[in-house]
Image (cartoon, rainbow, N blue to C red; front, side):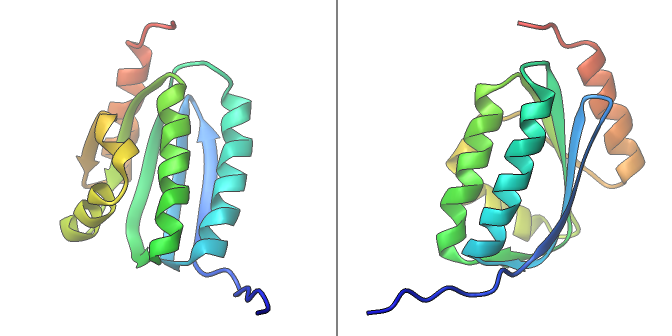
Length: 136
């Protein structure tokens, strides 16, 4: 049987500034889309090194993902947990979408997660937490 590969679905933006790794996800992701996101985010995480950092996730335009993509999201969160993650903030229009992602990604449960209403509020709070973080 031939191997079927699908075009990647979902889009994202990544950045890293002042100790905050930011990513915004848009649409619905499949395995290929999440794999591409993982590769890009791990490359960016390598630039962070082992310094304390925060993550800010914008889920306001996130629509979900296929079941086979979930282990990859968990893998990325395990990488966060192995580094000096101080806190992880979420911008989310729907608490239901966040709860679904949280419930299907075990590595998230050990993170200090904070919900925010605005990007400005999130950045201010996360940089404040980061300023008080002690390097290992």
